Image (cartoon, rainbow, N blue to C red):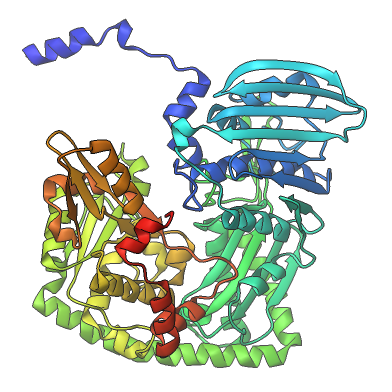
Length: 639
C-alpha cells in the first residue's frame, strides 16, 4: 500500500509533459520513418527522408505538372531536390513544413492519387534535419524558409523572374539522430529508377545523370531478370493498373508491387490480389486444377495500381492496407453521413487480370504452351518433394528434435500482437547459430519477448549443388523452414528479422554462405524484402584497468589502443562462444550491428551462387587468394 501511495504522490501535474511537434518527431522517429540508421541499409531513415521529398514531386507530375525532377547529393550528405510543378502557395510555405495536419492532400481535389495523405512527410524531414531549406516559385515570385531541427531560423519573399514554377528543397539529416551517415549511390539510384519505371515520361536527374523509362514496368522486369526468361514478359496496361509477368527457371517468386508510385516492398492487399488473380486466370485458361504455388513457381513480375487516399501500414508505406479503391464520406439529406465505397482492390485486379491475361494467352498460344510446360514441371516436382517432406516431418516429430533446436520468443511476426505490443512487430528476430556454445550464450542473454534462437548442427548441405529432393530431405534445413513458418507461404513468416550469427572464422563464414545460398535459391523473396541480416560481433576486446572497449575492425582496435594508452590488454575473438554472456548481451540489444543481405537490380542470384558455390573452383580460389588480407595488411591500409 505504501508503494502505491508513493507512486500516486509522484504522479502530479509536473509529470505531464508537452512536446512541440518537432521534438515529438525526433523522439519518436520510428513512428514517422521506421528506423534511423546511417545509410548502410536501404531501409534506413535517411532514404525515407529523401523519398518523402521526392514523393511530393511525383504527386505533382501525377496531377499533370512538371516533367522533370532534379536530385543532387554531391557529397553523399546534403540533399537538394527541385521539381517544376505548381509550387506551394506562397503564403503557406512555412506552415506546410512545420505545422502537423497542414497540407494540400487531405482531399482529392488537388491530389487525386497521391502517395502521402497525412500531411507529415516534409515535417518529418524538417524536424530530423540539422539544416532544412525550402523555396517555392510561382509566376516569377518566390517564398522561402530556413529551419534547423524544425525550428524556423529565417524566412522571406523575393522576386524570381527567371525561375520556373515549382519547389526547391535542401536538407541535411541530423547527425545527432543518424550518426556518421552517408547516402549510398546504389540505394538512391534504385529509388530513382523505380520512380522512372512507374511514371513514364518523367525524367529524374540524379547527380547529372538522367533516368527515364519508355516502357514502364516492362523495363523494370527486364532489368531485374538476371537470366533469360522462359518466354517474353507479358505486359498489360489498363486504367489505373499495370502488370508484367513471365517465368524463369529459378525457385520462389520475384514480384515487385507499387501503389501510386510507392514501392510497397512488403506487399499488401494489391500484391495478394495479383498473386491470386494470376493463379485463378491460368487455371481457368488451361481448364486444369493447378495448385496456385505451381502456377507461381519461378514467376517474375510486377504490379502497379493507382488508388485514392491509400491506407498504408506505417508511415514508411511499405505495405498497403486498403481494401477498396476509394472510400468517401457522403452527407445525407438529414445531415448524417455514410461511407460510400468503391470496388474492392481484389475485385478490381481480378477483373482486369482475368480478361487481359486470358485475351493475351489466346492470342499468343506459343507463350501459353511454354507457360503450361513450366507449371506441369513445377507440379510434378512439388508432388515428389511433398512425399519427401512428409517423411522428414514424421522423422523429426519422432525424435523431438524440433523443440531442442528452436528457442522461440513470445511474440511472432505473423500472429496478432497482444495489445500494447504492436510496435514490437518489427523487432521480432530469429538468430541462426551453430554449435552449443554460441547457441547457449545467445539464448541466455536474448530478449525472450522478441528474439528467438535456432541452432544448426554442423554445416548444412550445399543447396546450390544438390537436388531439390535432397535439400527437402535434409533435416537441418527442413527444421529451419518450419521454425521460420514458411513451409506453405512466405506471408506466414514468423519473424521480421532473420539474423545469421556464425563465428568469425573459416568454418563460420562457410556456414554463413551455405545458409544464404539456401535462402537465395529457394526463398529469394526473404532477401528481396529485406528480412535477412548478418550479425556483426566484435573481433577485439581492448581494455586496461579502468575501461573496456569492443572493436569491430582493425581501425577501431588501433583507436582504442591509442585512447586507453598504457597497460592495454588485447583479446581476439574467433567464436561467439568465446564472448561471455555478460558481454554478449550488449551485442544483440537494440543497438546491435547488422549487415543487411541485399542484392542490386543488376545482380543475379544465380550468378552469385554459381560463383561462390558452384564448380568454378580455380576461378573462385584465385579470387579468394587475391582478396585475402592478413592482420598486418589491414593495419597498413585505410579500412
